[in-house]
Length: 361
Ligand SMILES: Nc1nc2c(c(=O)[nH]1)N[C@H]1C(S)=C(S)[C@@H](COP(=O)(O)O)O[C@H]1N2
Ligand SMILES: [Mo]
Image 1 (cartoon, protein in one colour):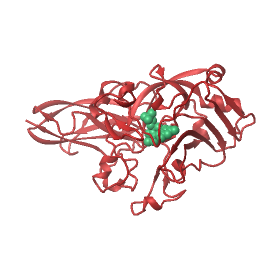
Image 2: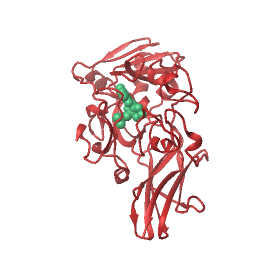
Image 3: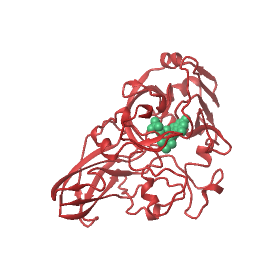
Image 4: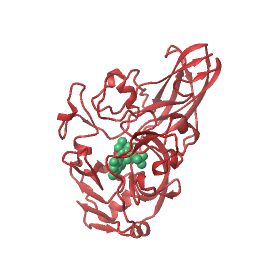
């Protein structure tokens, strides 16, 4: 299978390559194996010679930097951090059931995964460059040119400087203790835990400290939540709500949607992710559409920036059963019940209650 992915990945697009694993595959481990990780690309995977690769750090800095891979690894302390990434389009299929979302991949719950990342802290690199403490944003850029962008341009995005200075944002060259695979951004990618996946820019080659958010298409125009009546083809820079910190979300991974099970006790498993610096506080699971709930057992988190895998056992009556799950976070916020009031023309940020349909016999 392409790009070292397992044979059963669901390929949404071959070029650019976009694929997610079947939901059950994500339940197997806290750290998702590399062959199971989703891939989200907006353009062709660039072929980068690591020996010729340079990271340029500029903008509002006292000392602009140009670093080879050896310099990046040699000059700064390496850190390892386990972090979950999640695409803003994760679970879009649930929104597309409400109303058509033309031109966007119908991602299921698999556009999210967890890895241990090894790299240097963006904060340390910014300090070495003498980044202006009053600059509000840090922008990333990469060489992959997307024809989705108008005009066609390199992929980019930005994060607030306060987030960039948090120790959790890494410039990573290894994933699950393996060299970063080409499709995941080799030689170096940004890892921005708690933010939509689009800010974790792969094949990173430029960092700019600046006063304003990036004017790259994928920050200024795309990855923004438009009102339902907006025409996404007519959207311009600054329209809609900018997406940064992830919304609280969860989904059911086992049993599979459409499964036939024996009536009686059944194990239900899934993931929950709180987004940015919030924590998952509780996950409720229901076999009667939300009339009664059972609290799931949360697995110990592999780190503060990761999903919680959860499990519980529910008694299934014979017949068709809808399994429902909803998470709560440390601010006592819960997931909204229905995708209908979350619908937006680009299909981002679906964090409605998880629902799968099974038949027990
Ligand atoms: N250069 C570059 N970085 C990128 C992208 C891209 O298309 N080009 N896609 C982004 C999006 S939308 C997501 S969700 C994550 C996906 O990371 P993965 O493919 O390693 O799973 O990468 C982000 N970084
Ligand atoms: Mo994404």
